[in-house]
Image (cartoon, rainbow, N blue to C red; front, side, top):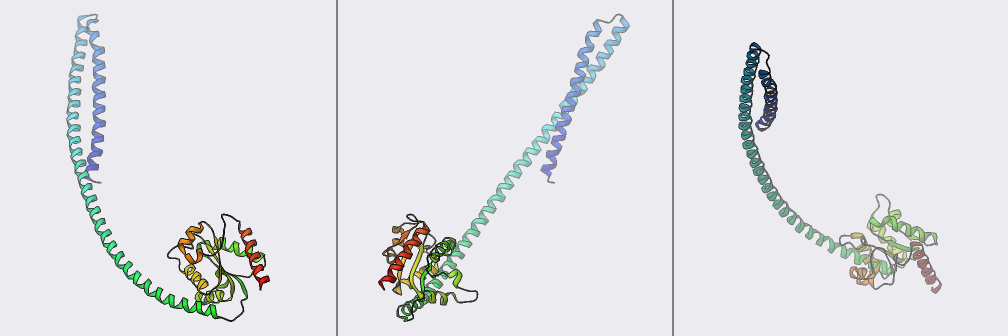
Length: 289
């Protein structure tokens, strides 16, 4: 317990003692006021002297009690001054500690900012090198897809962002219910297999690329959707965008090549209607063939 806390508790006790002394003095004063009239009502000289003696004792007791109250007032006042000084000193110490903590936080923030800037620069360099390698790989992939003579045995390659998996799965199920064979990563890529190779094969086998375009799909740091779209377009695939949660103009801003493709939107059709339109379109392609 700190000195300030000890003095605060002592101050409470001294104030309680002062209240008791005041009550004692008030009690004596009441008895004195009751005793004084009895002097004049005394029936004899002896009785009068007895009453006067009692009044004199009460007056002395009242003076002593008032003196104790006055002394206690001084004790409380002195202790209150001490508590006030200690509280002021504690406030100043707390403010100094807060200032030191704020200065230390500022120093730490500056250090973290410098470290983050250095890390960001290093990451940007790494991303740039990786992007160069990816571009080479994707060009090779697009060329392979475009020149691959193997017959296509998958109707639709469904490209989607992982946060949209649940809704994309519903669209896949609607397409399957209409007799279309759909390639979707969540059911085609098995544990331990290469995601790049699997997607390469899926794009190569598909007749149509279906891009489920959402706010998550067009996020700048989204890797697979961006590269799936590039492989589909570079591979001269028929690409159909299905929009959910954004407009065609926003899709155009994301990709001019994708924005040039005729597509569908959940703002205009339900998933079942979209599946009907896609199935009808693809059956039309079969008849044309």
